[in-house]
Image (cartoon, rainbow over all chains, first blue to last red; front, side, top):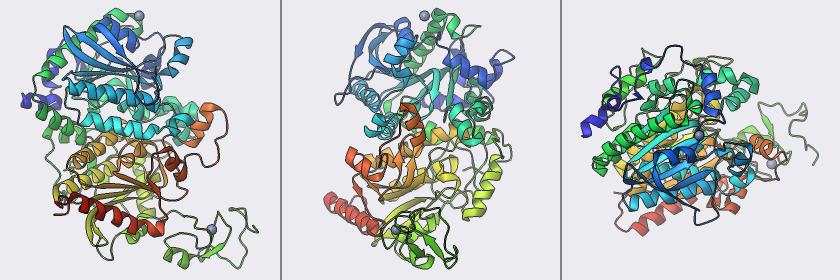
Length: 330
Length: 283
Ligand SMILES: [Zn+2]
Ligand SMILES: [Zn+2]
């Protein structure tokens, strides 16, 4: 069992066991030719008609009961959480919710959580752990809210604590990036045993506009920044940031919400089923290794520190990307 | 008040390789003396930035610092080019600082207590965290865990390194996962925030110290002040996102003047050792 999960990312062979689930894309070459540009992916991921978390929850899970509040300050509408059943199995869900209209976007703060939203998430993560519920998170945010009240209430601390809690949460975690994976504000829901993304979802260290404003000194260069940052689905597969992509209907998820939800449901059932059979200690050390392995470095001396063994497929994967000569990583 | 404008013309008798004007009080400071005072203005206490080498000298006992993982360099995972290719930016930063990337890590003692020490260097691409910073910090935490020594990280960073894209973002998870192991083993981690500590660095390891200390006046925040002020369309209050603001709002334990930093860190490490009784981290 352990062995099979370690091979999640066997380079060149696709992601092994993940491919058995219909509809999952584990190798970018499986995608239709003429894949969208990075900028088209950004536009699609942000399309207001795209199915958002609440709608996906309603179609994928049964008997959803929403839970509110961080028990400290207030309930943040940009984070939706609760307990539901996935094909009969109780699971915890924590999701970022954008609006499907201007009005709902104002109520949901455009899917940009405040610190109390992340703290609500953490409360539900702990609840999942306590009662052995698998955790499913749905990521869809332009980023954490950057306003002054968010700073006053410790936006950075909330994100850092949330990320850390997920790295050691003793229950299976499946992450699905539905639309925008906006930086640290997305990663606060993004640490899992398996990270999936819809085909046209994006995941980036900073918004293309923000990157363009800093590096090109002009937000109008966002298109170039998006391409340079490699934030679209196929790029994320190559870098290993996501394990597999969930196919969208031909015209994009916004053209057929039912089909999109059905594909997500199939993927989630299979992943939760699989992870639930893995002993928690194995799950935690594999989760550690999954994130430990990110990085592309060159180390001429071959290393002095006793770094823990890193999976061979990860070394090959990270050094092969874009830099065939960078084999010195330890 | 006579030299209020920090960017004002310097009188001829103060050549800049010998003298620096304090942006806070306007005093002309003799560089050698400023350096001896660890880049703190003797007149008003203004904290100038301190590079990684100066930081090590400030905190580590004399000749106690042994650098580790010194030769790790980035491999440009995305082939990133903005107005310049990323490898050129790295080369320029290496030439400017004499270091391979934006953090120095190593073993040291602080008042005779063995620790693992990491100091970030803002001069190197704004102290940004990419694969190299993430790897070195993670190894530092893993070494602290393996050798049961406390970890001290001094941050100075604008956040994650955009030129490494989502892989840079993943360094947030990588570093805090290693710190979680320290936490579970009850090995102390002291986080020192210096000017500036923002973005993805604050939203990961820097916020998670058992004790979080900050230098006076340091800029500390999640979002850039420009973004925050554009978000609400107004100017931000004075002192917003400064170290004292974070103490007031409950996210930093103490503002500690640089000259007292070493003894304060030693105080906490000693206290934790005594409280632990079984000396579990000190061997
Ligand atoms: Zn719909
Ligand atoms: Zn002064």
